[in-house]
Image 1 (cartoon, rainbow, N blue to C red):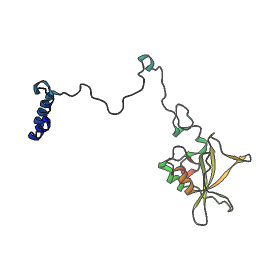
Image 2 (tube, helix red, strand yellow):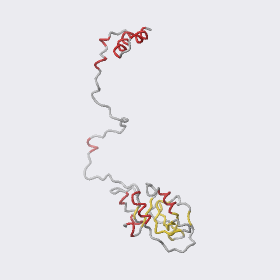
Image 3 (cartoon, rainbow, N blue to C red):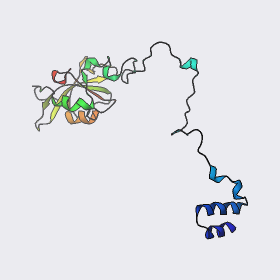
Image 4 (cartoon, rainbow, N blue to C red):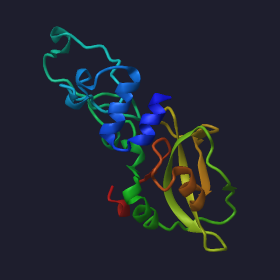
Length: 193
């Protein structure tokens, strides 16, 4: 109760410290509240590391080590932009060059009657676009070969399977070249390949 009375009577910061000391029964001079210093070592932001600290013998490496690894073939010494496993499929389209390269696809003079696939099959690693035709509404339909997870073309009855897929479906499937797991390849002169 003395603490509450003291708080009602005193309103400043010093008065509150003095009232708290009076309530606890400690003399203000013994508290050293005014001389609180910052810690000698600043705490770093984020959580503390749980990684084991290696000894100097472990951390020393001899010779050149490459930290580059490919996210496509998991090989060392290169990144996916120069992956030798996918070079034979053509130029891999990235977000930056997707729109330009898809706009310069060669126009094919294929006869009608092809079957339009509404989706890209789920086991597909990539789509190699070989050209396009326009349907009756003027929508571009792409002639494609599908690349499997084993870095080979999908086969039907011992020959390369050709799929006719709407450009809108390819755009959505590959997120217009932004997807990191679904790739679009082109192999024609206009793509700079």
